[in-house]
Image (cartoon, rainbow, N blue to C red; front, top):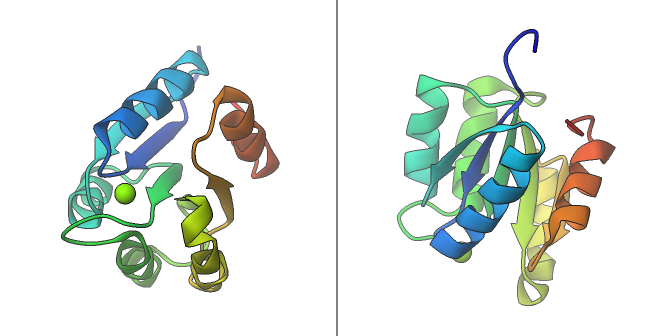
Length: 126
Ligand SMILES: [Mg+2]
């Protein structure tokens, strides 16, 4: 009721993943923006810096780690929070993502319990 709702930028080249994440996050009171690659996500951040970014790894144009590096270079290590989103086969990338400034990660496919549980861990449990 007071102040603006928490905001989340969902970055994934899969429209299905974006739709699932949006549905969950909006049900928990988040304002949601979507981007289908890192370059679009960076433009979105320039318009409005979200509280948290849900970030896919493998995307065309600009992938997750490229976006993460650019984001941290521009905005520093703390904000926005970044939850890195990966598949079983991409698990080797987690260490690199954390080293480059992601706060947390979740495995795909995720559900409401997994996503909101992880957000709660980083203080974004709206
Ligand atoms: Mg992808």
